[in-house]
Image 1 (cartoon, helix red, strand yellow):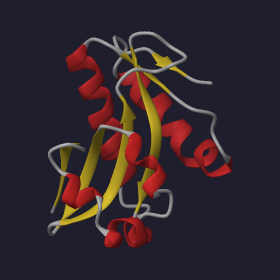
Image 2 (tube, rainbow, N blue to C red; image 1 turned 60 degrees about the vertical axis):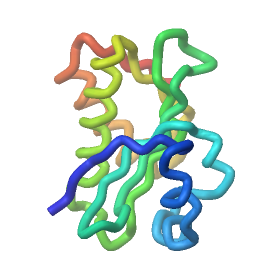
Image 3 (cartoon, rainbow, N blue to C red; image 1 turned 90 degrees about the horizontal axis):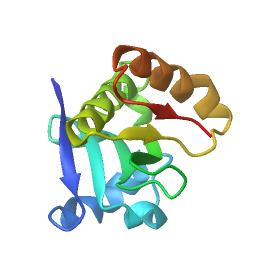
Image 4 (cartoon, helix red, strand yellow; image 1 turned 180 degrees about the horizontal axis):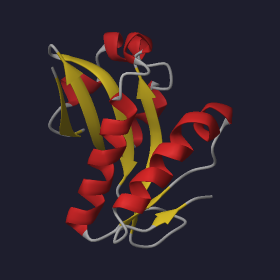
Amino acid sequence: MREVRLIRAAADKRLLDSPELEASLPLFSRELLKCRTYLASFCEGKVVGLVGIAETSRRVPRALGVAFISTHPDFRRQGVARELVEALFQFARLHGVGVATTPYGPEGRKWLRPLLRDAARRYADVPLHEC
């Protein structure tokens, strides 16, 4: 069974410094540790999906920036990214802000953009700002 949890870099540094994490999430790199907040999907105690959140978007005031989203290859097409996007919109709603994206690469246009747009329709009070 999977669960999504909020991860704060300051409090969960050991988890984020794990070499296993970098090896298992294709879009995760040490460079992305500049985020202070993450939403992580756990399965049997291991991170199988992660979204990095910039708590303030440089481009859009009052919006969380989506720095990256990554899913372990063995857990793709099982709803992990959808769960993370749902949690992201719930987090944004709780804080009274929108969600801002960075430019999509080819994979993002194919998989992430539809998930974000679908969530934006369900969370009409959470604006989605796409770049």
